[in-house]
Image (cartoon, rainbow, N blue to C red):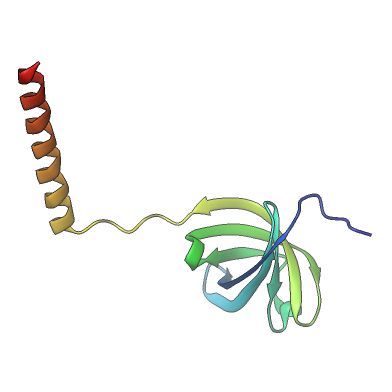
Length: 116
C-alpha cells in the first residue's frame, strides 16, 4: 500500500548530512526525491539523530530534515525547513565588466532615443 503524499522521482546525487552544530558530517546518496522528502542511502543510519541538516551541493540546496523511517542501509526523511545555499560572490573583474556593459547599454539606449 502506497503511503506517500507526493510522487517521487529517481535521483542519484551526492549528499552531506551534518549534525551536532555541523561538527559531525556523514556522506550519503540521495536515491529518490519528492517535494516533501528524500530516500537516502547511508551506512549506519541508525546512529544519526532524528533531525539533521542535509546538503545537496549539485542542486545548491541545504535543508533541515527529519527521519521518517530507517533501515541498516537507507532512510527516509521529510523536509522540515529548506533554504537555498547562497551564491558565491562574483569576482571584482566580473563586477567591473558588468558595470562597463551596463554603461554601454545606457549609452546605446540614449542613441536610440535620439534617433526617434
